[in-house]
Image (cartoon, rainbow, N blue to C red):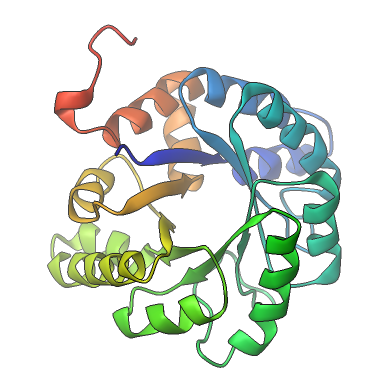
Length: 252
């Protein structure tokens, strides 16, 4: 099984918002990413709308539906986000805890304590046919608590692994991710991953986590795209997720 790439376009939206206009266009960026082989698109809608805005979601959902790929909406448990997910019929809703003032998501849900908040939201989304995923840290002991919430997937928080990878001493972090993924899979959960993944740290992660279904990548991918171009960068990330023996040398 080849792990799927969902391209997170938040940083494209952030660049657009910095000038207050319409460029760069999220829809055009999504079209390029899908043309280059991405399996889906992710947007994280925060309450302050510092990158993705509420009105960005429906057009990108429609594009994904037209192209037969998945749209993943990330966000916290606030009612407007849940209503947006239900109204637009997203394929997946990844529930992420938010702390006021944070620059980016930097922690998973505090389980089992957060289950009281998560479970009814998950039940509502799942009843509407929306697959749920919850953001969790790579601690194997949390996987049972995650399963108890009723979610269908988890998204493993990979920033500690990415930081350790830069230092060249990442075995312990990779082992924690692998054990967490294996335990989640044994409990019937699908396994996603995300945060600070890039072309360099992806291959070891994919090799160590055979249960990995999907990665969501935005910041590093957009940074690479500034130098390489968006289409070429997405193709490079798709290749990084594909075992060498399964790559098609004529694909590009």
